[in-house]
Image 1 (cartoon, rainbow, N blue to C red):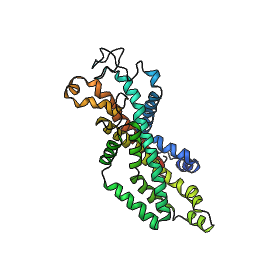
Image 2: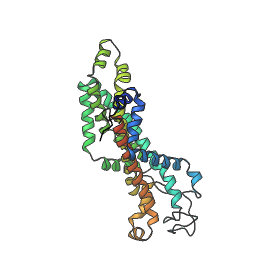
Image 3: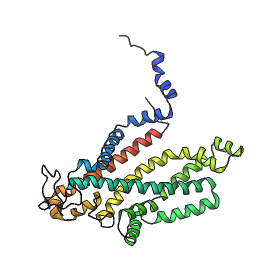
Image 4: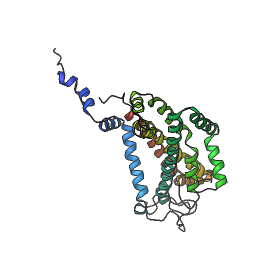
Length: 302
């Protein structure tokens, strides 16, 4: 019995493909191999499209109270039934996606911007600047984040804008330490030292040579941060400290689940928003795993 031997060109084909592919192509090849990340990206795209097209995929305004719809079971006209106030649950789930996703994206944008500024200054300049920024970061990390957010929101008052601002302004310490660690490593690389020897200004070294190497891990951290922000908003709204009714959010829709009677007999009031939170957060976390693998140059393209 003879064994067919592979041609030399076939043996070296993966190596040639990885050598000739552009960085963007290599990133996409690594990301595409992560099946759960691909499925999660499709799911999140559907959720985002539903949120954007909410007026076109719902028949009833989310704040409108319908007579006879109080705790009504799902039907042909109201596919997810009515809540305790007589509002259409499907409309509130779709419109609630707008609020929850907006809180996650805006809050993380604020925290990442702060982390990028403080972490860059701390890691690049070091010395007294690093000492001052890192001690403030350590103090911020001492306090439990959720308790601190609840305290500040209770003082400012519950609203969607306060929730966005508070989560963003208090959620930066972990990302700032990540940025600092990356810059401490990159600033010692040969091309940075060469730029310093050529007299390139610190600003240009930071923006053109160092920050591009920090954005990849920071993007992964931001992805996980969006999931955490959505969960934080849901918890605050569930407790009455976040987005207040009649504005729908997935968190305040779960507020009705505090009743045993609702939990046992009216599942359509709390299961849809709960599943929306669960699936969205899982999808974002799988996306983060896929991005982390895609940005890792050690991952093979085979």
